[in-house]
Image (cartoon, rainbow, N blue to C red; front, side, top):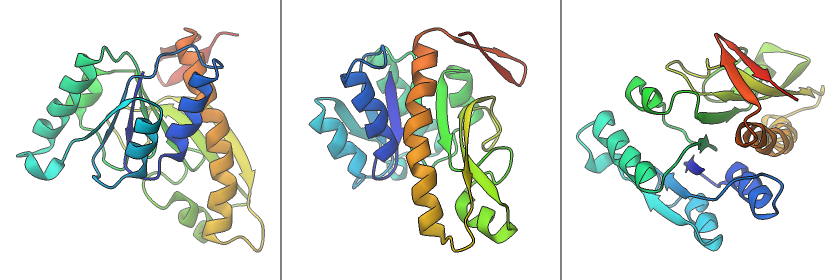
Length: 198
């Protein structure tokens, strides 16, 4: 299992620590980032993982950038990719290579509030409940089959930061659980639905 991350790496860390503790039956592979200064790279190296910065600016386009990542994932026998705070939209080319083998975490109850700044979208819309979603990545933006969701109540005095913090704690809970279910071969995709065998 390998990872994509663009930032601080807290969701990546939550999954990796569960693997290290033996709670998720997987082997840590590699981490790839599109940001040279991503903290996730340092966290991965602290776990003894190979961590790579694949610079999209040195590539002629998205296809070349993704091909560079695919080569690294294949070199390390990656069977599952966890997109843990990866901020680039993956193209059809990449998705087809890893169909139903890329798990993403999104800070909203999809299909509500896809894309960026989901917490701000929720506050501006005035919803009473939001949350987070672990899902498979498909060719759309946050449109893939849903694995797990967790609801978070929106408080009257919530700011974007306070709401984001409560959602993040749930992300740290359900993303490792979704990965665990995948690694235990308990997930099957039928159309838009993910069937979980217990």
